[in-house]
Image 1 (cartoon, chains in turn yellow, green):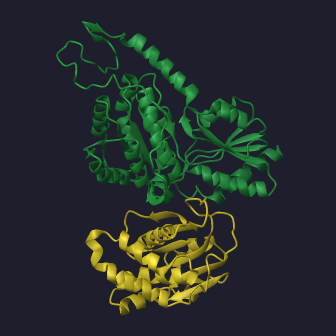
Image 2 (cartoon, rainbow over the protein chains, first blue to last red; image 1 turned 135 degrees about the vertical axis):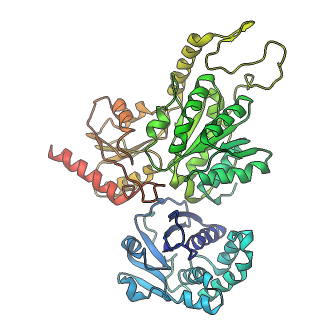
Length: 191
Length: 359
């Protein structure tokens, strides 16, 4: 899975929560992060590989099955690496399916920004999208994501835990369960 | 022990703690900073000391002091900061003080720095270059052992991908067998007796307790480094036995090369790979053996061509050696650039193969 966005959207935290949740469920995981020193507004990208057996993957993925799109700015290099038949879960508040121009796979639109704003926590849009991703793919359970998020939020940010949990649940409720199943994929080559 | 998802820097810090490292001093510099932060959290919890020093020179000399007193100690930086440590590393090699230097490098341009060093004198530094976080954890523990075994400073050559990638790893302590006692450590027990111990690059001793002097001392050290070279070569080769083309790479570039080898094997090419795990001592005999069926040896490293010198020395003219790497730095300056990708490696391998076929 490739996650892309701009600095400040919580992409890195979402990637960590996903990898940690997968490991907590007994999977193996690898997470590579790529972000600039400038942080806010700059490029932020992460890749997460989850395996049900020994994980062998490159730290810079040559290709990926799915993408998590919070913002369009750095989408083209992500799109270039998606395999045919891939799955894109996109924050349609900012990036709708036509913006992505991705026609070789499945696009799942989740108005993550709008849902987070309705919840009164616009900062938690990333977790809305992550909850949706987890449920749509069945890669990890929402409860595991919530638990991982709790452990990752630093002590000086614990006031956001409740909103993040609500965001994860709202995202999960916004999509059909396993409409793009991760584990049904045939076992391909690693990476 | 169950594995846990950890960032590479945290995993290496855990491995340091597992290996008994109790003193760490360094100056923040990306991508090394995460290791320093992690050590600053972990060492106080186990009764150790971590110091954020004023400069790399101060850090390495503090570590030299702690190690001279018998502690397991380490420092680190990226190549730019380790440049400042060269004098102390050379002194430690020549006065036989063991510690570990973590080079969380910004790329692969520190091969010469690690394997040749920038200090004076006849010294070498054992350098291990892990391919991923799992190997970095293993190498970290092994390096503390090797440092003590040979009484010498040693280097872990990691990079951004080792420091920043999260992987599920096992950081439980590993056993590497018994070590000689540190009966040379400066413990203060002989103060005032006229027989206090010395750690001195010139090994001249005192008027009432003369040492061997520089000539005998440095000849013995040269023999020691020769003997290390004979015993500590490490490597990994992949599908090399019948390979007409052998691609040599090191560190985190290795898995990328193996991926390309798999792709090209599936397309019918007889190609294999070789990765020195110890950059010094360079596994020259193993490389010569791995290349025995090769028409051409290709060297892929993300720099202007440094390891290729060791490859040429190992191959000794038995077949052509061609450089297919290059300089490639990410816009941030903190990591390798686009050249470290499967597509560009594949392209360069195929170009070199075509050249050979056209010959």
